Image 1: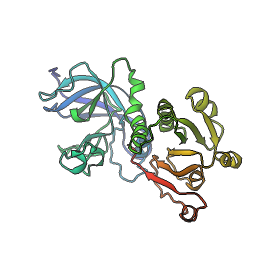
Image 2: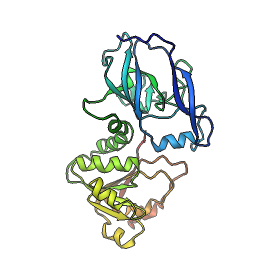
Image 3: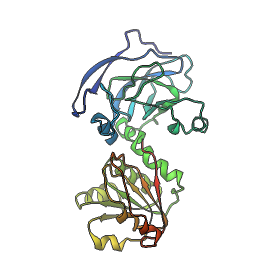
Image 4: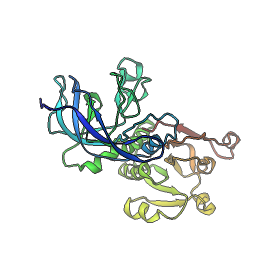
Amino acid sequence: MGSIEMERKTVGWAARDPSGVLSPYSYTLRETGAEDVYVKVTCCGICHTDIHQIKNDLGMSNYPMVPGHEVVGEVKEVGSGVSKFRVGDVVGVGCIVGCCRNCRPCNADIEQYCSKKIWSYNDVYTDGKPTQGGFATAMVVDQKFVVKIPDGMAAEQAAPLLCAGVTIYSPLNHFGLKSSGLRGGILGLGGVGHMGVKIAKAMGHHVTVISSSDRKRAEALDHLGADDYLVSSDADQMEKIADTLDYIIDTIPVFHPLEPYLSLLKIDGKLILMGVINTPLQFVTPMVMLGIIPRKNVDIYFNC
């Protein structure tokens, strides 16, 4: 077991109010417990959820707040009960750092649905102290919520997999959408959308990127390898692709109408909502009920 013979202090970049400005913030980490891993942070991705939290868009931010939940770092110390990791390992930490371990979701290994789960930041840990995220020099995390990063994978490439990657892979797996040959749409080409194209293509899907303008066409087709690019404001393009998609993963993080995209789905196709949106979404149900738009499934699946 490694040992850190100094006061457990670290520095992070913290939001102190909803202005969106981050500044250096010094705070104390808990000592490494029996099941804990002390991680020196190498890099941390930025997610749109971080922006929501920093700016209090969801109305539940507590300050000072060190954001960041796509964390990659090196293990510097492990507790006496840690068996999965050793000093020197490169590891990742995602958006959850605790759970009750006793409820039905916890017993089914789906701790993300635990009603007492503890978020990586903007939450309170079991010791009563606020959790702080990966925009920092170090973290102490229970080994249950630490993952090993494969050898040879660059930290900056691994970090987005801990949120955007999981966000895309999880619904594709959950809804049985992993078979080669499916036709999928990725609505929005931000961070999650990028990962959506890459993962869906790796599964052998025909992938259409759907965006509000032509601005990201070259990025989608030439850089990410999408098969088609659809501008949603072009009625002719929308009509041409109607009733052709097995699923759409909607990654847009702001309010937008759903009806135009439902028409693109095959019967029993799935519209999977992944964006964190702070205003209610809506669609006109008779368009589905009366067959104006054939029967679809609208699935709301938790983003990280």
